Amino acid sequence: MSPTLVLSLIAGYFTILIIIALLTSRKATSASFFVANRNVPWYMVAFAMIGTSLSGVSFISVPGMVHAQAWSYMSVVFGYLAGYLVIGTVLLPLYYKLNLVSIYTYLETRFGFWSYKTGAALFLISRAIGAALRLYVVAGVLQVAVFDDLGVPFAVTVAVSILLIYLYTFRGGLKTILWTDTFQTLAMLTSVGISIYLISDELNLGFQQVIQTVRKSEMSQIFFWEWTDSRKFWTQFVSGMFITIVMTGLDQDLMQKNLSCRTLKDAQKNMFWFALILVPVNILFLSLGVLLYQYAAAKGIQLPVNAATGKVIGDDVFPLLATEHFSLFAGIVFILGIIAVTYSSADSALTALTTSFCVDFLTISKYTEAEQSKMRQRTHLMFTVVLVLIILVFRALNNQSLITAVFKAAGYTYGPLLGLFAFGIFTRRQLTDRLVPYMCVWPPVFCYILNANSKAWLGGYEFGFEILLVNGLLTFLGLLAISRPAEVGSAVNPAAAELVS
Image (cartoon, rainbow, N blue to C red; front, side, top):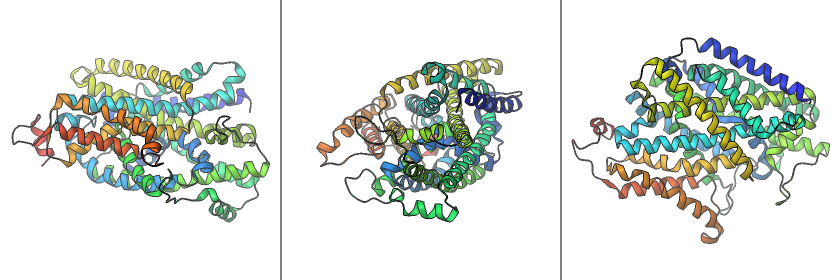
């Protein structure tokens, strides 16, 4: 695939996004940037959220991981369903009751200033890292497919990739993103479906034969029960549930979309339908993974291997096959698919970071609309630069599956958020607010040490995504230690008494 062709695809794709942005960002205000004027149909939000929640990590890592992890990822997906049920029945009613723009305002209402700022800061760190890792995927593919041949440094590839996001989101914000993400989700799902069809055709497999091939493969095993196996069902399921609660329900990015719905009932419809759709979408990704490895075996293709471990590098399998071994058309489909799914996640994250910083730290509502517009755009540009820097650091340090890296990072950064919100929702106790930042710092540090030594300390046990639960529990216990019984009339904010009643 020639660099000129790929650049032409990228240029055409972003032309469409910029046209959408121009049409949807007219007379943009803070209300439209942050919550799209709270007037978006629920079914549009549900569809747009698919691309946002999956990202390029899912597009590449989920198919790539079936060689080592089989279909154990479906255990995590089943846990997602339980997590979305909690979000729809517990968190969304709370957010709509308070009429929030930033969900971290709840922490100020419930506990006070320092709890609020700690929660918002944890989100900014968590989402910036997560968004950067997702963008790293598409930047890496574009580097191999295009810019290496042109002699362009990786840092320039990253900067250009993120600048393109800035250009179509800096004015319209969420109002624009809901339209661009709808388009990009459709492009991504179409790409996956066409990829499966083209690989099946190369292997001379009909529809029924594809189903049988996937089902009979050892790589399609879902359930693992061994205690020392990091793929075991129950830890994957529980981890999936809490990953969803923290990375969706306690995350300004995806909740910002839900808060754009007209009513709580619409937001709940969106959440439950989105959860159901996500299951067959992930089955498509995992089926694609099995077919990729079947294709490589049938064609005698040497897969990329880590020289140090001798293991297949799952994240490189789909890009390698698509850009070097598939037909030209299949390669084009792959490039468009990964661009669509990665940017639908990254543009939303960038807008959420801007929203949280403007609302939670700049208190943007106290300024005039003209001043707010300047503040939003400057903040948007600032986070654009931050994402570039994180990607460059990660490129120097990465040695694992990207989806594993994303969830591990979430385990450390979202754990304190889980503990904070759980303490606020499920207890009536008040906190010594000034001590909250300290209680949210030591659990991630302890969990990092525990995770590094778990095999030696716990009889061979290795933590997977469940490190998030340990982190959240330790935060909860730390908060309990600095808490006191609630007294009538003593809440930091009068509304707090109602929230815990």
